[in-house]
Amino acid sequence: MSVSLLRRSALALLASFLVSAAPSRACAQRATDSSFSSFASLVARLSEPGGYFDSDNIITNEASYLQISSQLEKQHVHGGIYIGVGPDQNFSYIALIRPTMAFMLDIRRDNLLEHLLFKSYFEVARNRLEYLCLLLGKPVPPDIEKWTGRPMGEVLAYIGETKVDSAFVAATRRASNARIDRYGVALDARDHQVIDRYRAIFVRDGLDTRYSSLGRNNRNNYPSFGRLMMETDRAGRLLSYLADETAYQFVRSMQLRDRIVPVVGNVAGDKAVKAIAQYAAEHHENVEAFYLSNVEQYLMTREGGFDNYARNVKLLPHDSTGVIIRSYFGGFTMAHPLFVPSPGNLSASMIEPIDSFLRAFAAGELFNYPQLVSRGYVTP
Image: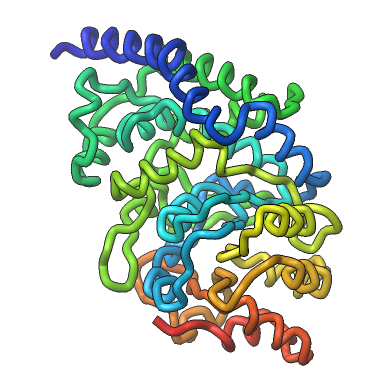
């Protein structure tokens, strides 16, 4: 098929699918247990004013993020409510844990905006290739449905070999923004600019999109988006949400039912975590996992507020299976027992039972971040 014909087919497919069929189907599925307005209401009910963090966090820089899979299985972490900071690494944890509800909690309002962008693509992308095409500006092949379940290597090969199509990017932007507006979340001009900036970065950098810091030197060896999608657990299993069709479809089903809700909030703040705790109690759900990356490190050093954060954690309904997921960066990372040496890996990921953390906090045993990550973790 010629390039021009492929382009026309892709644009026709995008126009028909995003503008007509997809909205009605998404609304039909959403109507079973929520609505556009209730999604926006929940975002507003749980959120607090945003704060500043000196990283853009368009994707994670934790190459180790999937190395906790066996620990999650060992701890029987499944179902319930999931809370996580940051962007799309959360989707892989959601696919592993299979919660009934997930809250994307972050101090940066920009994180909420990025999750609205992701949501607009999930809802119309029938499989992983279509999602990546929408996200990275690559035309969707006319036989897209035949790509469902294809090996991730073939999916990434198509993305890598296919050029960005500017007309497709423009059409995707219009359809995505229209869908985001229908979610009902109050957005101003600056919010729309941020969404467009994130969209443009993914299109510009493609599979080479990387984490970036603000006002600090960025490491050239931070993992790329393409690498993160192909990261494995300790047993060598591909477990990212885009490496497996079943994982992608589970995350997509949650997006279609408004079960992934972005929330602006400080984990040590006065509203967001408490409001999520109240929501969990109202719905008789336990918090099964609270993914924090290395936020606790900042609370213990630069920002303060660690005690408030720990008191917020205590409010979360949970049982013996509930865990905190954290990562460790620092001068002693490579000496940590859970560190897995690999090119470009700068972190060690781990889980600790919430009850273990709360006991140590109550006993006054938590002094600094290296000490925090050196005790209480579940072994593989």
